[in-house]
Image (cartoon, rainbow, N blue to C red; front, side):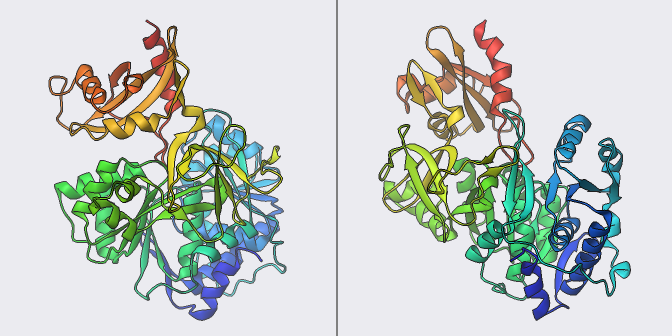
Length: 503
């Protein structure tokens, strides 16, 4: 079974239903299907063994994703924000690639010395009329998508995701044609992120219109939700922060917005609570997943958010900081360093198993163990009711005086300070302790040195943390370095702060 079936099923039901909105471009399911057929034929004619896409997405994303599937070749959306050299290096790692690029990125992609096609040509509805797709169907175990990891601490790895992985995820978590006729999903995540892939698949399969916002702007996001009657949306933490800040300054009526999902990296609990206060009618969804798991593997739903926010029971209230429980078909384990499976509330490495889990990399192969478990390298715990708590990457653990300290232990406390907007804790080399804890703090707007200095931050920490977890150093930044999907670039901070800490 190919991922193409996720388009074919809704097309067979109602080809005239509006499916995609991208600026002035509005496409029905039938038109999308025709564009996919035309695109698949062109990809086949090119002799491509792989389709690399360089662009900001929009309607081109689902069209090229499904066209590649019908042509029987993998689709690899690339990070258009990379330098020319970095982008060329990724293209060269894709054997037999044909590059399809937005106009502004064609010259950059051409530096790889491969065929480059204009993505706009794949969105010509008139030219696609009566187009026929190539014969044949993809092997379920064949590659559907190749996504490169962010490579924030090492060379990006190419994650291989099969048709079976993706169809298992979508069909296991989404009911076909389950959306109401008026439902619409606003998509503003980058096309090179697994969330961009899953959004293109799951919304069409569910029967929601897909509304694309190619370049995120909080005011434009709010206005688009209002104008298009958006019912569902997914954002990364930095987007959520900017949306709420814009909404506080100039509220926009959002009567149709029913569910707002966030994920990609940790969201500070004060921001979650502020969102619940401001958008009380909107159901918040925390979605946790990895590229290697074909997107979401755990969800904290709207009812979970509301119950945790108002509960006086500490065990329930702390769930607001969890990523919820496993989705259908997914199994979770927490293991210690020796591989022993831990019980409730034990802290160790998270392992995941299920048909949507790939765990395979180009040039490396599968990293699944003998029983099919994927090692996430995330430090985590699971409570007695099955709620999953992520403590951060194992590589980010701070080892101070022989004691392992998860950065989240420090961050979750400091971010509750009313004058702190965001914070990251990192470890830097220290001759006495091995590593010292540095808290990198972003103050709330308008807060100055006189209002909040380093010693005030340390004093706040001392009243709530053990002495070994109180930051040794506090530095202030106007913003934290992050990827477009909201992941904090901790290694950048460590590299910047190491010389300063050594002085």
